[in-house]
Image (cartoon, rainbow, N blue to C red; front, side, top):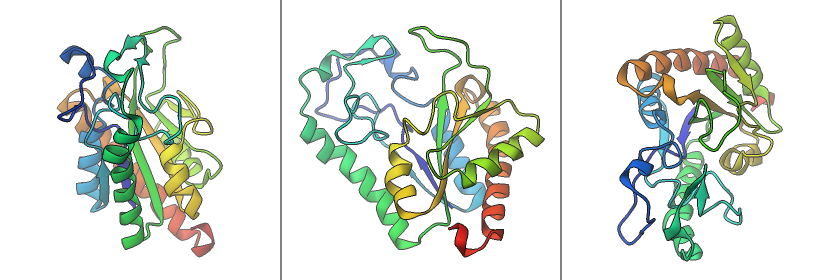
Amino acid sequence: MLLLCDHASNRVPPGVDLGVSEAILNKHVAIDIGAAAVTRRLAAALDARAVLATVSRLVIDLHREADHAGLIPIVSDGHPVPGNREADRDGRIARFHDPYHAAVAAQIAQRRPAFIAAIHSFTPKLESGGDERPWQVGILYNQDDRAARIALGALERREIVAGDNQPYSGKLLNATLNRHAEAAGIACMSIEIRNDLISDDAGVAHWSGVIEEILTETGNSLASQGPSAT
């Protein structure tokens, strides 16, 4: 399998001034808290390749299409990003968005995976309002739900509170997997872990172990379905 982590970093590269504080860069609006650590542990445990982002999603959201209105956010969950108001959109796409997606495409071209999983985290509640999010893990998917159905069943058997296309729907936001997996007929899903569960080393270790089991079971089940499934 191939692992992806679109929101792995809160790095702001030289030449980019977002006009936000360090405190904002440590919030979920800038980085998927815990996702990079989980992805790295999974890659090691599963002997899988992984592609991780190296810039904050406040610089450019790699999990958005290049023409998406929120590609370079000027407000995120109620937090203004004043430095993005006059951002060089084409320049940031060329510098960050294109190379990231080229790296993902290169991994797929070198050794076509049978299964792609994107690792994300989500907040227990949006700062700008909304309901509490009770799920421990969410499984997101668009049209291809082969992997998602297996994973949701595996989570249910472990009595994990799992969201089926929650806390948001992969039918609305699935840019990276739409581009690199569904478009190529590769089974895929996003795994969203509630970020308060993976905000420290103990949480990362525990939930990496859980997700390792889920990914292994999903991958094995997909493989048992034969070539027609991939």
